[in-house]
Image 1 (tube, one colour):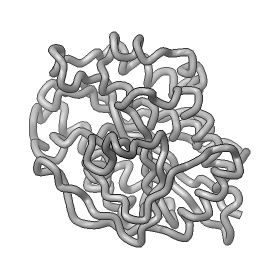
Image 2 (cartoon, rainbow, N blue to C red; image 1 turned 90 degrees about the vertical axis):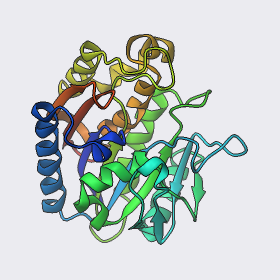
Image 3 (cartoon, rainbow, N blue to C red; image 1 turned 90 degrees about the horizontal axis):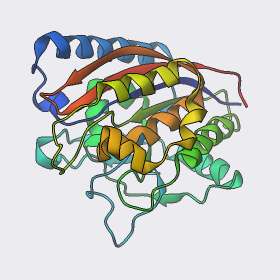
Length: 274
């Protein structure tokens, strides 16, 4: 019987690694938090990390754009688009197959890919969290930018299903779940560069108070108005929160105008298995 042994979430903008020393008083706090989270991941002795992220038209285009897709490759290659991290990370195809089966049995018609490449939404967090990459990854793509999007409620349900499916894994397997995306930012819009710190802190408070389910009532229009189209990526945080089943611990939050994103990093307490 397997289980979720660790869950966390982090922002993923490429500037984190391409301009790491911007605004050093703030960025140093964030880098220290990633180092702390990396230690927690290493100490958890995970057999795989499900990395829940999106894609920016590198792997998926309009000829094939799923709501959810799980990667089953032996090895996953980073696109290295626009100077973002490239290289390869080990996959965990056997565990990915088990999770795919478990999620399908729980009512999720997941797409799957045996050749899934990874853009910066996966590769930047893995560069900052080498212990996650070393554990081996099961990439889980979530559509966060091309309408129609999976609802926030459906994403919460997916997180709970991941926890349940992890319980079916054989041999005491220890699974991590890492959500990556957001927080507030506007991409390709006139408000590019703005950050809504109130939205970000309010969202993090919701997670720390164990009230992630309340986000199911939010509309995408409300999110975009308040926090930008990039904040639609909070779907990945909600999946991680629901998979964990417990409240968040905010390791760091900083509004980073130099990176054009409100940057959050958190871990989650793990609740009782479903």
